Image (cartoon, rainbow, N blue to C red; front, side, top):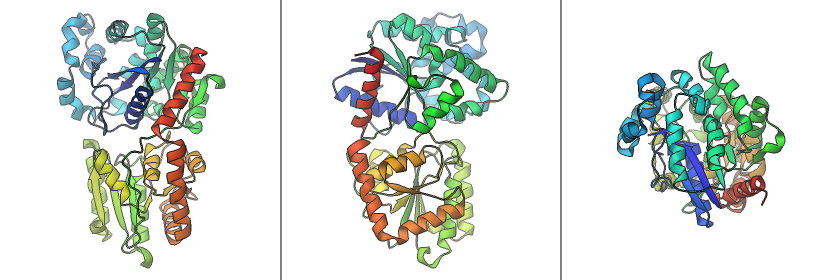
Length: 429
C-alpha cells in the first residue's frame, strides 16, 4: 500500500504524537509498505531515526507566521519563500517555538483549520504540487485534527481517502482565547465531513471527540498505541531503597507537582525515608521555572538529595532510566489521550500507578500492568504507591503482567497492523 503520513514537528520539544507517528511509519515500512512521511512547521525531535529526514518540511513555521501576519507575503511566489523551509533555518528557531502558547496563536489556528480558505493557501498548494510529483497514495493520514483544513484539497487533488488521527486536540483548542476558541471548534465541526475515518488511541478520547465534533460512531476506529520494545532491560524492582519514577514533560499539567507532593508525604513515613525519586522527560525553556520551584520545595522538605533529574534523554539513556525503577507514575491532571510513557514503563517490567480518569483505566484494565488510585490527590497517590510497594507478591505479579501485555499486544508492529486494517476498511479491500 502507498501511504502519506503528515505530521507536525514540535521543534526542540519532545512530542508523543511525533513519536507515535514515527514509530508507525517505520513499522509500516518494515512490513513492506511504501510510506512517505511529511513533516510540517518544524523538524521532528525524536529519540529514534527520523523517518521524515529525506522529506522537505512544508508549512515551515516562518512562512506560516508571515503568511498570517503580512498580506503582501501571501502574494509572493512560492519560489521566493521556499528557502525559509530549510531544516537548518527552522532548527534555529525551534527554541523560540517551544515557548509558543495556545493563547498566542488563536487566529493562526483558525486560519489553518480553514485550509484552502485560510491565509496559508500558498503553503497547501505547494505541498500538494510536491506530493503529486512523488507518489499516488492509496491513503493520506493526518496526524491530528488541527490539520483537518487541508483534507478537502488533499482528497480532491490526490484522489484518495484522507484519515485523521485524534491526539489531544481538545486541550490545545480549549486553551485558545475567545473568540478564537469558539471559532476554531466551529470550523473543525464543519470540516469533519472531509475525513473518511478517525483513528483514536483510546476509547476514552475517541468517544470524547466524537461527542464534541458530532461525527457518526461508525467513522471512529480505536487503535491502541504501540512501542518498539527492542533494548528494554527488565527492572529488578529495587527495594533498598525503592525508586519512584516519572517520565513525561516536566510540567504541572502532567502531574509532576502532584507526584512530588506525594513523594514528600511518603518520605515522612519510616518505611520510605530512603526512597528515591527519578524525574525524566522533556524539559523546554518554559518548564525550567517549574523544575527550579520543585527543587526549592524538595530542599525545604529535606528530600532534594534523593531526587535526580534526567531531562531530554536519548533512547539509550531512557531505556537505562526505566531499568532502575521500582514503580512509576505520571498523574496527569488533564484528560490524557493515551500516555506512551505507561507502555514504556511496562516494557521494562515497572508497574504503573495512575489516577482513575481519562485513558488510564482502560490502559490498566487492558494490560494488568498497574493500579489506579482512589482519587486525584497527593494522599491518594501516596497511599497507592505505598500499598503496592508493601505487597511484594502483587508488585511482582503486576510487573509480570506489564511485560507480557506489552510484548503480546502493544508493540509497534501490533499498532501498525491494526492501523493498516483501518486503511483497508476505508478502501474496502
